[in-house]
Image (cartoon, rainbow, N blue to C red; front, side, top):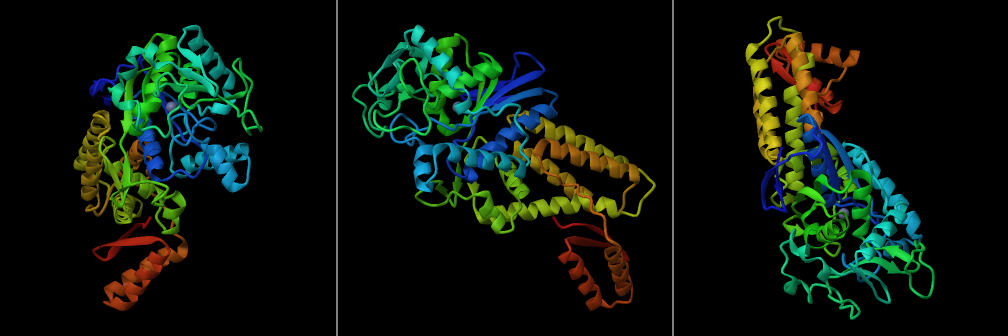
Length: 471
Ligand SMILES: [Zn+2]
């Protein structure tokens, strides 16, 4: 597997530390709201990475964390905790916000056929690990305390700039919401934040430094160490994680473990909606429910994600989404008619050779920096060939069926769909053949429409018809 590595700024060959095991840590959701389409693009891409590794014979160990405390509105150390802010809005407490949006997220993984990660640790369930981690940083004299928290002292870790290739001077003032005069440098970041002196937070814990809660970044360093050890093979996230979150994770982890946190840093690019950045103020944070309310199935969203490369910006528009849905229907049509073929005894050497070659080509493209658009076009080429055949032997049918399992294992989309016709439906198909033989076209068309309403499509071959599910 070759992947673009943000750390080296080149395509690197994956060399797993404990082959055939590949350890992967992906930064998960902050559970304060419904994830939008851009978030789901990223999670689907994580899944495509994991599925491809498995198809290539690796044994994956995948951690996806749940951020349920400590992620402040500004991504840095100012502003409110996102969960607390949402709790006020919904008139609930932060714990119930965390629970309901975590449940929603986990359900979303299933709805999108995203593989279940091996571990989904929550920040709130790893407070002790985070405190222990901060203590180690403190022992190494990399921290200092202010009136509102404990901070990582970036000046003591000169390699800080390496992932993002930051120019520290550019970083300092400007981007941050407000200047904290107690910080040594504005890029220093919180490891532990104190609860306000008045009032009680919904989420707070005792620590050696005072009552409070962990900073956002420390959870990933602490949980990655616990589940995957000091160095993992692949660390993934969105590109917006590069300058702050991942840079801070590296500083914390490498300062304690004295080893690289990850060998490959995999980052997925942004998604724009109607050409614009997704933002709360534009109200373009499309959800899965928005798609379903337009009768767009979620496997069409997977196909849309696969159509573009993770390296480039992806586009979302409803027009593209409708296009992906049509394309999905065509794939189902071209692969699923096989169950209706009455049977040809002769096995096709050509079909077998094409399937074998497609399988290899698709795997090769996925291994080549997850080139999903090329892998998909290989699938479409095979679909046009298959969709023009009129009959198939039983053994070849099983070969196509197996290829469908292979595609499902890599893309997470089932394109070979078997339906069992009811007696009424198969009678309707027979009746329609008679109408066609008798040139009673209107009646034949009515039968076709009736079947389509029941989700069955037809392809006429001579006097008989092949049938397939429409979705
Ligand atoms: Zn993270």
